[in-house]
Image (cartoon, rainbow, N blue to C red; front, side):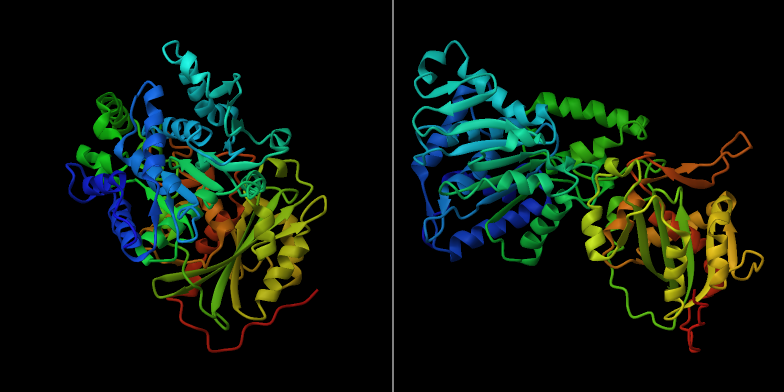
Length: 556
């Protein structure tokens, strides 16, 4: 071992391993991982620098960093590999709301441009989707500098305005950056900090903000967030990488994962588990009371306070009346699809307007397991496309969607897709919304699917969806869906809400139907195509493989 565990590290690890409060399983794995790194690697630690960096907290109202914050400062800023480079260049932190992310960022940023950092022009850029999140740590530093009891002293070491702070010696600047392109010009970041990454829909801004790195020595990157509602975005990627490092021993490549969250919704009802999601809770009695109040509100009205689980407890899970299923169940659909050649399937079609999105789902069954091949089309001239924040361009490159540069998606495109599928699979039946059949009728008729033949075509009504909803829920709950890695389909599920139906009756029937969570930017077509295909699932029986060759399709 090249050096002993730093005091700031060993003290926090002791709290994780034998402290008075419960910790997330990710924290227990992190403790083992850090001990392993210090045992097997040739590391050096700058204890003097760490003391100075942690000591900067005395200029703020809280006066001192908490154990987990000292732990991260020691590893991120003061631990080096055999080549003298930062051992952990990238720090990923996901903690419950109220843990003090902004305060930690403020202290760390102030230290990074202080005389204790000898690297000249070590700029700290704090990036976020909105100005408030980007500027709050900067304003916290400004407030510390303007404290009358310390202003005269700190003025010797820092220059500041209301929008930036500069270290007088190393000339590094702290600035808040938003998505405004004008705010990105000339960036030469030493440290780039992304605040509330849960709000990022894709990597475009992350890539732009990090292109300024590498111009000064020892570049670092910080990713700070609570959990959020954007699915299949950067946060999910960072979380997956963190857990692979912690639980699967994947090489970290300089990525330090610090994750605090509950494991499941059942844990939220035991207050002792709340410490798992928030490493600051033991030091903030007022915060505990605030969470107690929010918990009571959530128990009474979960549909109005569904973000309590997400923000406070790190569990992305909506209220049953809002989400189709738990997010973890959606992720569980990422199962490999075998070669289905020769199998029987149903085809579901969905679109609201062909000038927007459309989708086809091929649905297969074998025993209890369901397999789905899903494809979507996007009209590039759609008036609402600019509101869609999902990375659909990446999906198009990967082949999950087709971008159509036309005023609308021609019905022949969907028909041709089904016709091509019929060369490989036995397409038993086509199903789609009853009221939208007319526009596709001629194209589908040409490939052998005529609405007059009820053994080949099903025009789906709301009552059909209510009947199949319990089957869909069972498939999610028992993790029977196999969708491969189709982010577009998972995105569509998470855009869909499941709501009780009281259609023309006036009382709760106990049945459910589906609707969009938001009408313009959150498309549901891929999932609703799956729903349509499952409305005719009984024609597949138990889903035995067809031994006869696939039914040929009538070509255009």
